[in-house]
Length: 102
Image (cartoon, rainbow, N blue to C red; front, side, top):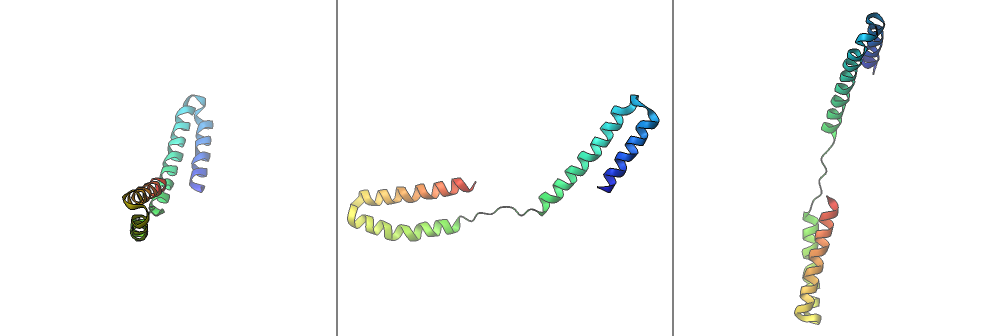
C-alpha cells in the first residue's frame, strides 16, 4: 500500500504544479496504476488457490455396491419392473449428485 500512497501523493503534488487542465491525465495514470496492482494481486491469489476437485469414483463405486443387492432384491420381489425401477433410481441419483457438484 505504501507504493500506491506514494503515487497518490506524487499525483496530487503534480496536480498542484500543472493546474487543473492536466488533471484528467493525472487521474487516468493513477487509476491505471491502481488497476494494474489489483490485477497483479488477483493473479497472485488465483495462483495460490487450489483447483476444486470432486472425485466421481466413490460415487460410481458406491452406486455399483448398492446396485447389486438392490437389483437382486428387486428382481426377486418385483421382477423385471423392479429391476428397471432400481436402475432408473440409481441413474437419477447419480445424475443429480453430479449436477449439484458443478
